Image (cartoon, rainbow, N blue to C red; front, side, top):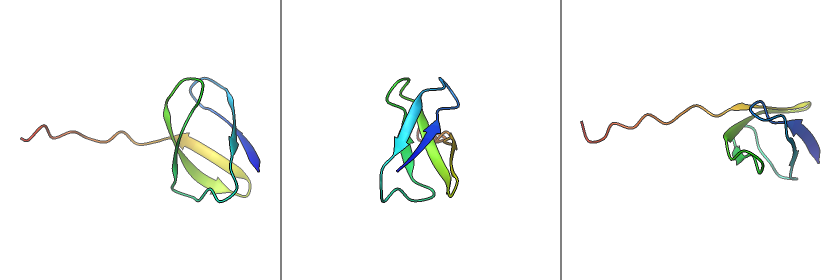
Length: 56
């Protein structure tokens, strides 16, 4: 298991076994969506925001 730091609130987040690159996780402290960008060493970044088209 690897530990990473949330780029938003600096909370320590443990990546569970079986976590894959590209997976979206949620910070348990601030609730922001994070994307796993690497596993060795473990790295995360803020997940890209989904663009809403609101039916336009």
